[in-house]
Image (tube, rainbow, N blue to C red; front, side, top):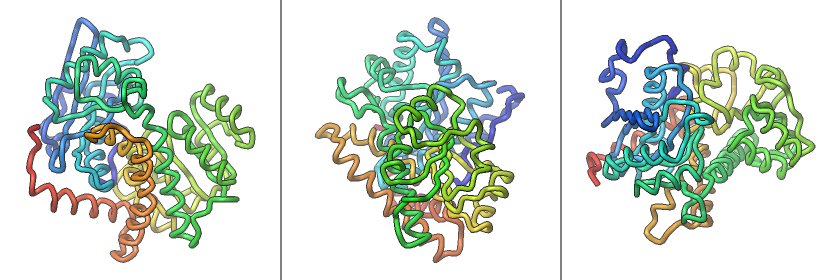
Amino acid sequence: MTTREPHPPTDQSLHSLDVFESGAEHEQVVFNLDEATGLRAIIAIHSTALGPALGGTRFYPYASTAAALSDVLDLSRGMSYKAALAGLDLGGGKAVILGDPSTLKSEALLRAYGRFVQSLGGRYYTACDVGTFSADMDHIARECEFVTGRTVAHGGAGDSSVLTAYGVWQGLRAAAAFQSGSPSLAGKTVGVAGVGKVGHHLVTHLIEEDAQVVVTDVSQAALDRVREEHPAVRVVDSTDALLAEELDVYAPCALGGALTDEVVETLSATIVCGAANNQLAHPGVEKMLAERGILYAPDYCVNSGGLIQVADELDPAGFSFERAQQRARGIYDTTYSVFEVAASEAVPPAIAADRIAERRMRDVGRLRGIWVG
């Protein structure tokens, strides 16, 4: 589980891809085409051993169907581990909608997608991800009862990036405490790559803790918003420029595959902890980080706050932000425990996190089997 999102191939057609081979670990992979709205979507359910699968819907202009399939398989697998490590009674799933959301997204398409999710009978609950927002979940929910992350006005948890960032901040504090004995980030230089939904909130936590923050993003609007709200933040024009800075902490908060061999070899930071999914570019990067003395906080461990937030909507009593935040605060203890297991078993933290999650899926999951609603 330590690598979930290597850059997918862009020149591979679906016809040349062995779907059964690539999705061998998954319970179910479903494709949907709605010509009237232009909807092309894939839902991947990795595991329902702990409960129904929950994971966001990513709306993205993939280069090919094969690239989209590769992404949804990796992301859904990661959600199983994330839910297990967070102690939730949920499995892992993910969905992707192929296309540019700025031109293709419409009410009709989202409602058609809602009917697609509904057809799975509750084995998969959807939520927001890259390219989708709480208002989109409201449209989907007009056709589907298995939706989380709706707007507050419609009884939902709202923007899940709030507690995602909160959890990453807790993970950062745990890493600092494990490394130096103090959870304080005051005076430390933190480089944040990606200040969109989650990175923006993370910067706020860091500034409030008196950290020195350097950021970069491909979106000028995102950078302008950070500058306006936090004038003390320093902006650089690329990820390469950010990595060239003298950093104490590196926080990848954009898309996956951020930790390549080249990045690890040149990184000055001694802690890596960010919100991006599937940060390790390939198997073995986690060992390179450990060999260089860089403490890596596994992404699916620290970025589970958003999952915790939307999962709280499923509580029979209704959503409570305070209850969800209290649970997300536990990411500090979970992260610290991962570091302790890694040290005691002499393995990188990414492998330790995998072992903890796999143990829970095995021990609890064997009592349940496949979720059928």
